[in-house]
Length: 240
Image (cartoon, rainbow, N blue to C red; front, side, top):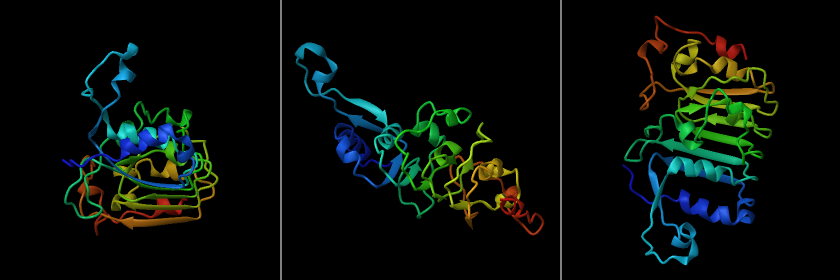
């Protein structure tokens, strides 16, 4: 398990007390690990009346939840790069184990069935999202200024309950996918078709196929791969 000190908590602590600085950040790049961060709050903030306590009070919070709260402090950020790992270590680039259920850990209480009803705060000005996580959802793509979305690792597109909502700004969508994308309705791509249908201004889809290994928590099946016997179809992309 990665033992280095989290930089996300100090950044959150600073920006939560300095909203003027938060408004000056145009781009942010976050590596988030599934671990807890230890916080040493001033005792006076916990106990009224100036009761003397030694500075040994410690609280622990999940780092993904702190990162999610941090994103909501950035009203002017235009470029978001975020990677959600189970752990760090000596892994080849692009093969770090991804965090399972990453959206509910980043945004506690996240429910894919109702997420479209409550806009995610703090991302109103985002033009570009580069996402490296095990799952993705329409709520993160339904942003008024978003023009470029990149999914850097094969990930599961979660079902949503907003088939009639549209994004009229996204023009470029780049994704890394399993070859199961050519077999509509299978694997991680079961809900990709309805997801793509939400983007009315889409002009470019960039696709990289990556089947060389699979991530922790990814229910990747060999029979979903494109093979000489199962060549699949481009229909899901051509339909868009």
